[in-house]
Length: 428
Image 1 (cartoon, rainbow, N blue to C red):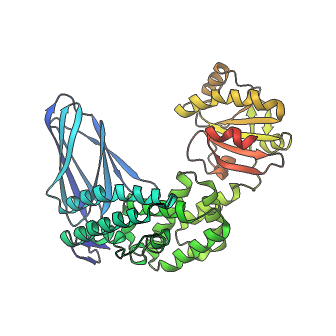
Image 2: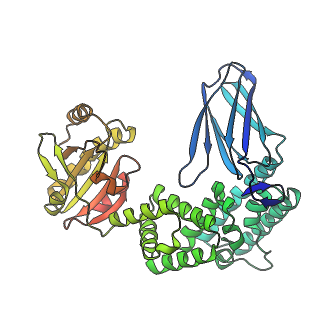
């Protein structure tokens, strides 16, 4: 579908948009590269743009729907909406020395609306989240909500025909509050059926913000509550494309933010309702993740240690009270900090039956040996060569390093998304 002012129509041809940016002001040094990020589920797409000798850059891209784009500048980021309704986006970047002072999309009605929307909505959603976590001042929240509703009505009226007015602001057009507000009021209105059925609603971070607040404040970590929510939401969303994007949003919200309990319930629900998971990528990801959630047997890994002996992860777990599986790389900054710091946990809990089974990945064997020798790693320390097919580590769906998995003495997973700062409480 193609967005045009005031209506949707079928796209005849794929539309291209052009971004033309100019640096102005007292510029003493220009960045060599600017990164442009397109908000895209489940992961964003990026492009590195070169700044030319004329203090400008140009970029063309194909967009058939309005989408959030982010410019990453030397000391600032700037978000704006781009889409086929406004084909050319002229951006002025005002600098003082090496510092960005101001960024503006000239002549864009869409972004005039979007800037107003974000300025009004961000503080309101912060207030709403605080209220839902601690619903104390009902009358104060009622007044703030009515003020915000008035702001959204103004955007919807003044900028009618823009994506911001017709989709984003419309998502927050609740009915006015005449008495004191309550959490139930927001629970019944936050995820509006009409909005959820619009595929372009998922093209900015606004959908993620609303869903995150809703899931944190209204969904506990019980299976019954989770299943009931997903049953309702995916019966409500009748658009196949919107349903697919909602699945991508949930996956992004739970997997990339490492919300383990919610992800486990969502994966179990998806496996029990395959007909309602229309996004094949998400279906495969959830089916795989369901096998490494808490309570499941740890997938086997057998790698060679520093002395060349092959060591089984399952056998290690069965022989110890608790085991930390640490998947890391000597080329990773966070790993360079955290892996040596594991020694404190190792020294404290190894006498009580803790074992650490570390697996070095994405590195040469020489880099692994040098790092290990430098930091005197004394636990089970293995090297995992990259395998083109049937790699056992693929079962863990590793998206970052270091990754920590906590395993009990029956080789069952206790936590798949353990954070370094929580390791001690998980192994006690």
